[in-house]
Image 1 (cartoon, rainbow, N blue to C red):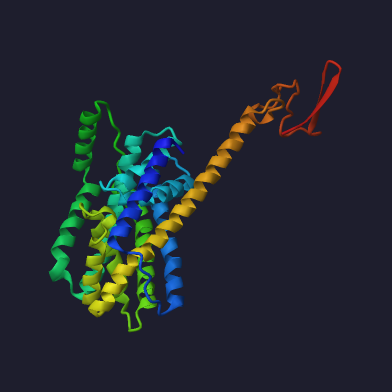
Image 2: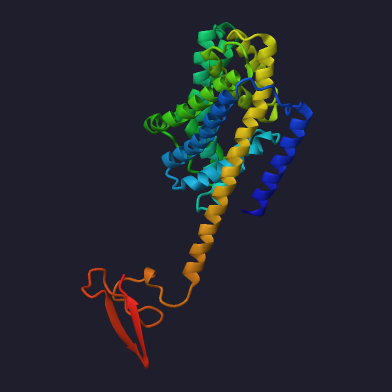
Length: 349
């Protein structure tokens, strides 16, 4: 992990702690149903993992060959970057992690990361709009949600926007920039991943509300989270969507039939609940990073090891120690080579 990325991770932790302290989101709520709360955490963790696979899916459509392990590591280690003012650090963070270990440019990976964010918001708003229709909230937020959804649709699918982005990148960077484009067929192929991740978050939030509220919780409650989370991410002035998500959630829960005091409790507590999921994906990403680093060190040590390195030689080619590698189809599997006074026996590959 390079020094710049380590500084980014440290800064994201500092901003997270600062905003949580100011907003006072760390109060533990009263738990009514531990079973529902545990189930919500299981779905929450699964949603984060699927979200990392969404990032990998977009990279694949742009012809970037990146292992799933690196996608999970980049997603996890940069998850707290959204709390840094600027709204771009999560997008840039996961792209920077992949760029530091591959031959791909940071500019191209950042554009792919931005497309991932657009697709994620598009799917979240689509699912949230379904819930908004059911609870009768179109008159309140329908126009805002539709305009944002339409804007994302144009940004994702319009070829004219892609050409404009290509020209803008060439002018800004003073060189030819290849914009990773996602055509309609490729987008349709990866949209189920985004739908699955938001579906898991919907179920997780529904179980979370049932874990805190003693009264009946309608199934439409779950759809409030995709709506509130998407609008919170798109809020320009609030790092991490702090405040915006809770406000939208409270209003949606009231529309769904939850009393205002209970709706406020669930909305505020959801920040701590979601933070638990972010800690989970950060931990998984940290572990994935160290597994990858350990594997890279082993491969480097193996390639630098002197002696009989038959793995890099074709059959019949002498090794550094003077032995000859037998062909895969040889009958005896061994071949003898005499080098001076020593007898060397090398097993055929």
